Figure 1 (cartoon, rainbow over the protein chains, first blue to last red):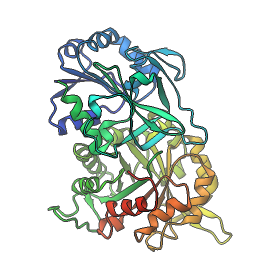
Figure 2 (figure 1 turned 135 degrees about the vertical axis):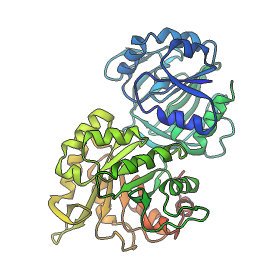
Figure 3 (figure 1 turned 180 degrees about the horizontal axis):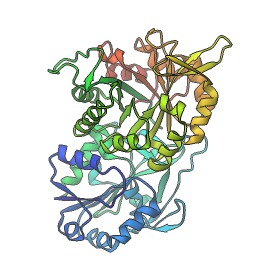
Length: 200
Length: 251
């Protein structure tokens, strides 16, 4: 069973819809016990970093996520991916979960439109089980103004947008982060979610 | 680089697609959910539902359509038509839309753009515009489906829209809409050059090459068409193949 962390931010129903469509058992929850008993956790998120981290911490879920990420697959999506990193500079400097090394900073793409919104093609970095069987042209859907800065050794995919923007980060074990929205990325996105479910 | 987007638009009245859709394999003709699924299969980058339901009671119906579509179509969904308040925006997004498109209401109440962007984020506020060339060579904004001339200069309006926090503009040319002679390139170019948010070209696509032409001649981010795709004159795949053959990046 996959626990989708519902901490009151963003449109989490689209993630649930996609898992339902794929026949992957899931539950929307903010209950620590359910997160602990789940096989996998998805941390979705749309909105601003500081507010989202505050909500996680008010619900007492920061330590739960840090502990569970040592034992089972965790996938952060969009803001949820950014929260996996050590800190963010969105509005104010704010600590993240620190599960992946690096920071979150405003996209620096002179002359290009911010937010980076639309379909962009994944370029592959380190080997990552979520990025298997995606075909030759893995386009995925992005909407974001802030982006990760991380080490190449944890970078599974990136896209070109006035420089390279991290698209998928991976700690090599249980922690995955997708800057794009797999639940809005057509068949490619569904395959990524299917791959995640396949880790159980 | 971002791929140029091809966006089919479904005009929906009382929960049915109007303009008589005739896709192979779809039993219930005019079912918007099935049409959206078909467009998704064809490789649509986004799907727009334009609600032309006149009655207030009809509002719930389009939300049901979005709710059902969101369960089986996993690309961004946009809903336009009849969105007048922040509550309308909230309801539409909660039903599963990723963006809303506001048009006449935004002209009459520009604050709606700002409030929507502040609360839900710029990325989900698209402003639709119907505009027409004037005798002096500028363009002016119309509302109510092109019936009322607001005597509002198009380029002033698009700059104001950007200032208010809109995430995107969908620009429809009344002069080229329905004529099938191609998008209104001069108008499109003028708007793209005036703002730095993405602009969707709308109105005038009549044949394959018109999409590539818009991307080659202007820096628009996407191109939208309704009846051309409805009547199966062209598929999204065919449009993309043509663009690709001309070196335009599409998904």
